[in-house]
Length: 92
Image 1 (tube, rainbow, N blue to C red):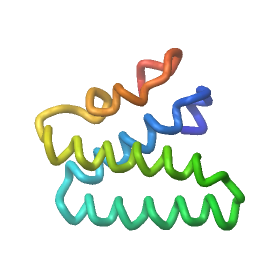
Image 2: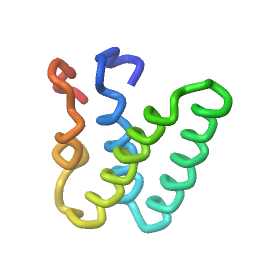
Image 3: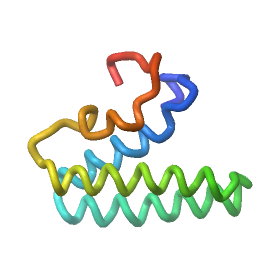
């Protein structure tokens, strides 16, 4: 995500990471959910990020996990196109 350095790409990377974890197994989906919750709690309560930013991240996280369950035959990039900002390098 830092390498991409593209404004608005945060949701895309959250979605894609959760999609890829959930696509591996139900265990991966569960772990992704726990990690996402801890990450967003830390972002709000330690880093001081606004609640709206964490909510947006959690929506992208959930979208990725749900897409992996509903569409196991697609790739993360396709599943998370909804969050893909203009100008994000094609390699992501």
